[in-house]
Length: 349
Image (cartoon, rainbow, N blue to C red; front, top):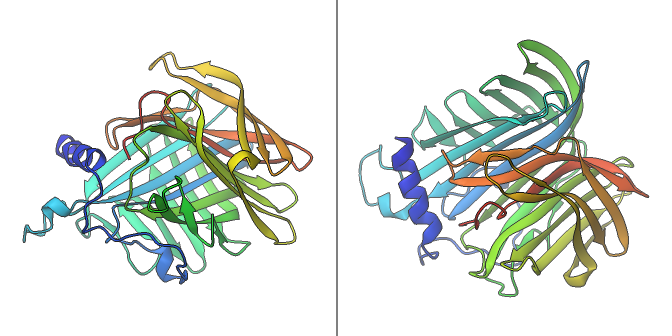
């Protein structure tokens, strides 16, 4: 079944967006809780939670991501088993004491009650892996290979609309865009299974929810992205789309102050400068795991909790990427996650 899923996913990644996909346009009025749920008319969507935790074992990082892909080629099939909507999930735990990322993955066609994504509110699951919002908090339960997560994540701030009021461009062409909002500073409480011991944890997390129908520009190979919860209560999201030569094709950032004032930046006002690379002994990919990031004159130095935070998801979404817990050092320090894609191979979506 997994192989069949990969064939369908490869076809989706390789083909341009057909006319039957819904189109992302500026000026959308976000509606909650509806927009926290799935948007099945769009090509691709993901719910992405990252966070850093404190435990008796020391600092830990975690990632839980659910992806939804629409497959129009199966929509004329009347069978309820037709893979018209496909779900993937990635989960990972960063434990600096172990020296390497623990991670796992799932994939399935959407087929209730085994796997589904609610359109009413955040509620996505594959078997016993779940990310859902209930009674005002997000909850996730993951039983992974050698680790487990049981976390409640309570919002402490309103959603942060990325880009132009949630319309996030990825290119000079307005059509290459997504709807995108974040929820910074989620308060995390729960338990993590590490080395056979269930540890009580507390911490802070960041949630991204994004959906789109367009692929990246043909000359783009991947992106660098950060989501940082600043210690003073502020928040920073920034990304750049990279070309084949490593140059920035497009860049965007959103900065919310501790007082709640929000401003966006783009172009030369957003800069990522690699300061140190780490080469994976498994894939040979060289990742800039330490970065200098500048947004509208503010500067941060990113340092990973652990160099080896590469996630091999070729058994589900067909990708290899680096997804790592980092500290952000500067005048307004914080902690969050750095995502690096397209270093092992070109991203296909």
